[in-house]
Length: 145
Length: 65
Image (cartoon, rainbow over all chains, first blue to last red; front, side, top):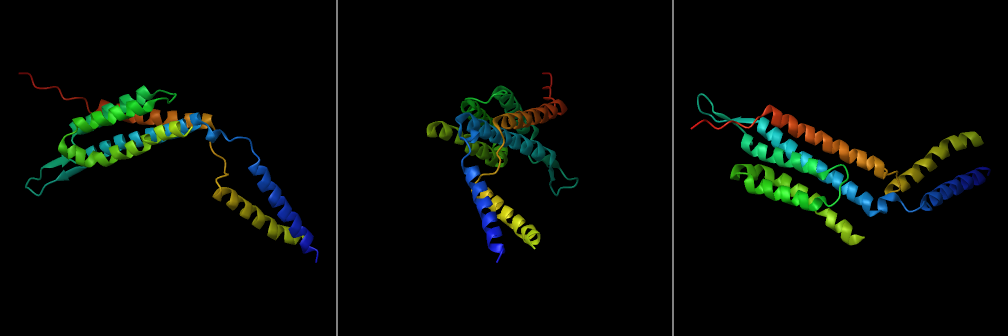
């Protein structure tokens, strides 16, 4: 019989805790600045992943079945250099406070895409597309606010 | 008796509330300062990786004509 008041008290405490968490002031994540930094962080990670993938592909050798076997990296050094130079300079240009990075990133991706040879494009295009998808969220934030 | 019930029920209630808060996205998000630190940490990490690769793979000098 005495369990009912106890359960009631616990439920009331849970309800109050829930209500308290609902009455918080406007959360900082709803500001445009917060969202831009959050997406910019994802853009940096996507660019870094593109660069890291290029470096890893350059380190992996594939050999043919000839005797002696002829080996070549999955991504040539020239293609890797195109990716690394462009990504590094873009990350530097983005600076410590991300703002208006959309154009910079778009230009970089076009530059990489235009300079890679056919074999390089086949391997790197999926990573470029991934960066485009993430960077494509930036204009949506601006238009939504 | 009451203490025993509380010991059993209280964690359950807290778990239910925590699960509800998580489901509705009311967990703690990073502050803007933490987010900026994260952004710059990733940026520095990838710039360093790119510079290290370029240092280890200098552009080949074209053969003299």
